[in-house]
Image (cartoon, rainbow, N blue to C red; front, side):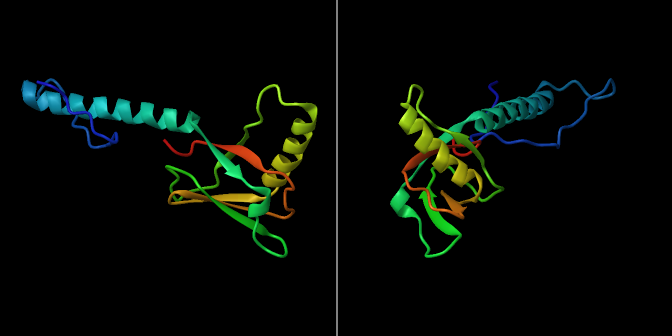
Length: 143
């Protein structure tokens, strides 16, 4: 008998407790083991998602609005409605000093604003328009 691993993984709190009085039925016991296995797979998937970083490109020319807050919405595969994502730096290792300075300035502007997730999108609001294009990372988004 093979266990069915759900795709996407499913988590359940409905797991029958077995004790000494429970009838030893292999098929029924396997149902419990299958649920526990799926919980393990689900938890592993959740950890992988939390550690996954999705890169998002924001163009300096893509900010909308004449006054603050300025808004830009970007497509983000796998984004779901939810809380504010964790913004992380995607500065290329070994970037020149000039590139680092421009990146840090644009990144700090983004960090001073807000980001919200929708179905397949992330919307950023800032109070000063970044003057350079920037690629940032959203940790725990996508996958």
